[in-house]
Each structure stands twice: as structure tokens, then as C-alpha cells.
Length: 95
Image (cartoon, rainbow, N blue to C red; front, side, top):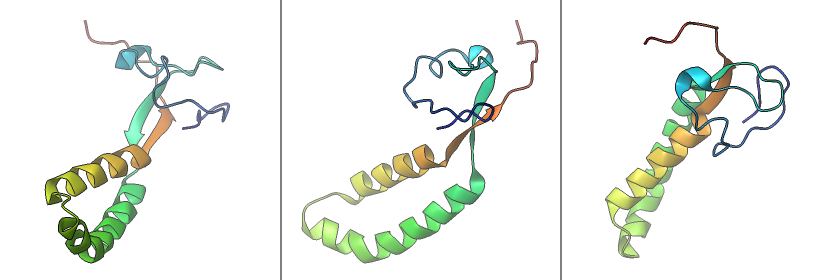
């Protein structure tokens, strides 16, 4: 993922993103950021998953891969590829 301000790369497992929600900031430029899901990307990936599932699930089940494993794997990948960083407004966190 890239910082919305400085466009430098921030890893999904970066310590900066593992902090509590109100403390997350870019490790390069220090602006507050938050993770959001890009719904357009998620919709496109969901459509592609539907097509791939229709074509590949019969093959995977004959290879012994349970349908649940394929479905959970696809859900995790769709979620991961749909996440984006956006600038967070400076709100006072609830106490």
C-alpha cells in the first residue's frame, strides 16, 4: 500500500499499521492514516472470483481441495487486495 500523502510504500504488516486505529500514521511523513476497503476493487474481484469458482471449483474438488478452503482463501485475498490507505482526519479518540 502507498501513503496517500507522500506515495511511499507501507507494508501491510508494518508496525505503523499494527498500532491502535487512532495512532496509525505513515512512518515516512507522519500523517495520520486509516485503512479502508475500496468497494469498486472488491466488486471487480468478487465478479472474477465468481467466474473462476464456476470454472475451477470442480477441478479443485477432484484434486481433494475442500470447497470451504477455496472459498476462505478467495475471501482473504479479495479483502487484502481491496484495502487502501486514506488520510485520517484529526479527531479526538473516544476515552
